[in-house]
Image (cartoon, rainbow, N blue to C red):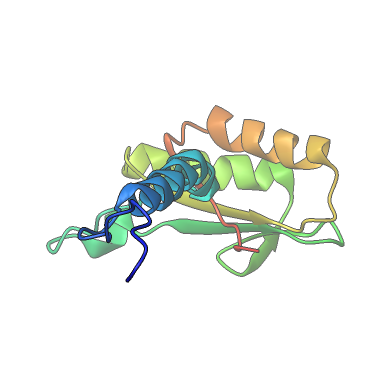
Length: 132
């Protein structure tokens, strides 16, 4: 004779642990998604018109670690930069400017350059950065 233990055999699959794992993964994704989105830098890329490509190309301004200011590969000083940018904006009001500065420069120096670019009438300004 066999003794009856009183327990029935499990006939179905218990999905409670599966639901628990899925909910934990969902919470992790919901918590980390905003952090990933904040790292993206949104830059308005200038559009190039087919009929007048030169009018919409961005002017490249660079400030290097030796405090040399260049525009389009030509070394200039700040007053000359303002004059060149004002002339460019006068001929093409939607002139875009791309600014890159060495990361070792003081924040104040870059802010002064940004102020000079804005004072020249430039409305489309992009900052060049590299991802980590």
